[in-house]
Length: 377
Image 1 (cartoon, rainbow, N blue to C red):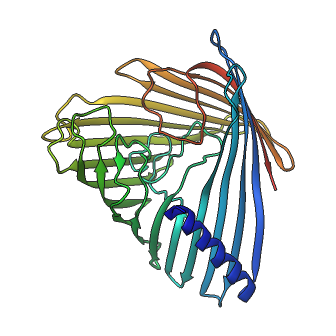
Image 2: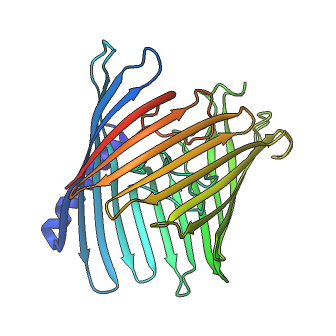
Image 3: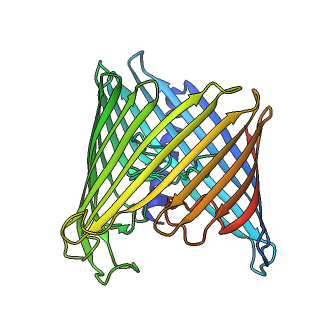
């Protein structure tokens, strides 16, 4: 039995014992997803499959100031390409498994969980612990095994502290793996300013280069990350989000990295309201400092228009300036009683590099059509 499977077993045992002793709120729900994807290039085939995310939630309130809660969720999937002779590709993995304790201004959460912060929404330098892809209407992401502590001050300022272990795969814009046997740790301080908010974030991890195609160094290196984000509401929303990364070993051009996003959004009084988001990402790297090499530029625009109470249409475009490559997504959404339907037309360049990595979202190069049916129970 692996460490992760043992941890899931422990969480399930804690769930059952807690519900037996002091059950106040127990819920079982889930999400069923059916997907069909048809590429429009020559020799493209129909790709189809399904996913089920069952979720147990338990909450016990000791009094008005403190409570315990547990969440356990799984990710079961089956997918197949119709022109392939291979068997149906199936997988069963933990999706969430955490226990949380709330006491006045304190929050403690331990287990497989989603950690997300920052102000950007399309091009996110602070996407350090998840794989949310803006092209995914469900915003699904794998979690990380972590202890998260948060303290909420009375003026809405909050302090985050965390420690991660056993999370190897890249997240967000990561170029390299994390060491599976080394602990990661860090923190964040988020505070209000006139007409906005600021955040200062730090994270330490050990980068693992044993499997990479970018550099000749195949060992490990300590890595320091510093993040700064700010957002203002000035009638038009404005924000900035930046990350500076330093690796201590002499690994060449990727010893230092810099990523910074500038963004804005506004809702125009056209019809039912046209909401536009625009972001621009600048990234650079170097052996001596993060601005050594010529910076690369990526722009993204997202437009959303509600057609009525239960349907909407959205358009997302990425443009990578150095290669003149684009990624386009046109999404029509219809909401029924417990079913949501998404009809998506897309084009992904096979050289496009700006989108975040995500093992849950299945994307394909070239033009295509995708149908998603979502049932929530």
